[in-house]
Image (cartoon, rainbow, N blue to C red; front, side, top):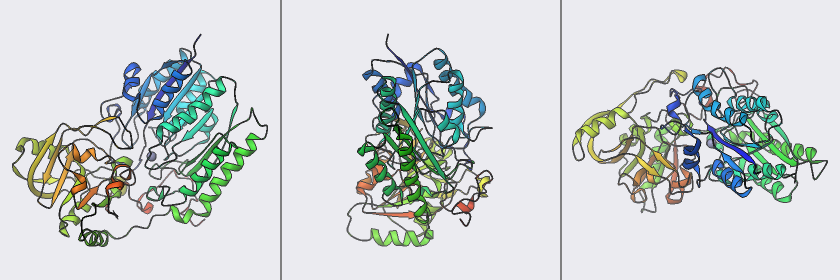
Length: 501
Ligand SMILES: [Zn+2]
């Protein structure tokens, strides 16, 4: 009889300071969760762990049951009712009987009344069946907890930022679990956690300590000393007792009685590098006016590609409202020319532009519709005049290296052309990591002198290859790299760099 694998995706990066609510409809990037066959159809063949798990099931001749696939853009915590609606189909599938479970999770999900949603998911599944073999993949931005590790059989995570190895991470975790089901190996895990809140702006392997740690992890995997070694730099914008830098290592106890010790040693070495180099995980922002003056000078030379202006404090890919206008205002004040900007989320402005129609001149209050009480910031719109250059339905398909092949939805989208700047305004939240965000509405990004993006690191997937220069611009918002703007209450203290340790 063929085996049965339950494969599910429940993902949310929760920014507990975000002003954005997370109703059930926010999953499916605004289209609601997918269940059963629809879940399989949505993610099969994509660059995700879920797709890798499907491929492993096929390879093993197993029946794949896909009760739920649900991913939302980062925002504040989901309600308990939404969480239960996502978890119940998964629990039902496990209860119906299966040989193993393969989960594509985020690792920084907080829900009403629970700071550790992934730990809760795993505990609940193990409560149904105590010896259930479970493989889990996590995003790089995971805050690892004791409940997670205690209730999973195999854990891996992404080793890239931008995350372009999602499928690979799924293949690694899935393969280890599939081989253990065949009796070829016996996975054992070691893990550790550091009192260190690292800045997302210093997470890319080429920027901070992560590169050295990941290179070491890859070398240990390649040597065969361990099966999988994963660095999880954490997510500073989730205020939980688990927030911090961690690592988790899987080794084969079946082949080597000392495997547990090897896993522990590798894990400790990874964290030792992070701790020794912890000062490099702190981001030091430059004043905004200075950044844009520098960008202006960089753009004055011969066109070797656009200068990227990274509005990183209001990144919807980490819970930002995507409508803070501070950086746009400074771009216009300093009279930068030939600028493309994406995306500002403002459903009301989109409606006004659609009503006015393509080609018409319009004056409107753009952005600034969202207050951010958790960081004491009030929304402030920017009054602009311009021409409605384009209107689209916002349906896009990624062709760049991230989420390759997946379809996404910006909601109705309109382009406001102020003369100096072409601004892509959307109904929905969306981080710009693929050139399609401009191209689908008739803007060719490679031809622009400046491109402003509401992103922190993921823009690099699609935009770094076309950029002549990159200038990080410190605006405002709930993804501010200055951790002192957040009133942490649950974080375990003392913690670096907030406390002197
Ligand atoms: Zn991430």
